[in-house]
Length: 141
Image (cartoon, rainbow, N blue to C red):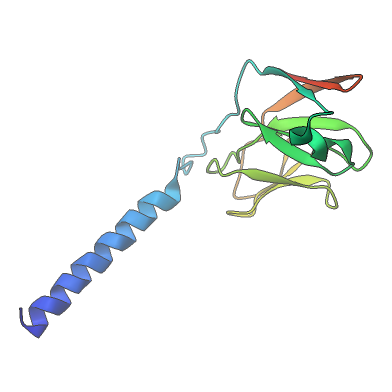
């Protein structure tokens, strides 16, 4: 293989990697503005005494379970929204100091009630009801 053939082969390989990475970045692309909805028919109960749910014992704590992000606000209320961003379905985190849900991937933010604060997301999050009975937290549609 001469130098020209080698450089040509490298160029094709690099171009292939770029295309593959671009396709992978789009994940479940939402460029048409379609909403990526959270799970439906949600109904589960979390035992707040279980170590897996310990974060919910503290104001500002949150966990992800069954596609739902369950958080305890700084005021102590329990809230629940879909776990994935409506922009491209990346996982959200709860930022209690800012009182919002945030997508680290593209920077979308949502209110504690699921409303869009900033783009690129254009659709609100699916929200779920919560009911606390003793140390059991029910999350449901």
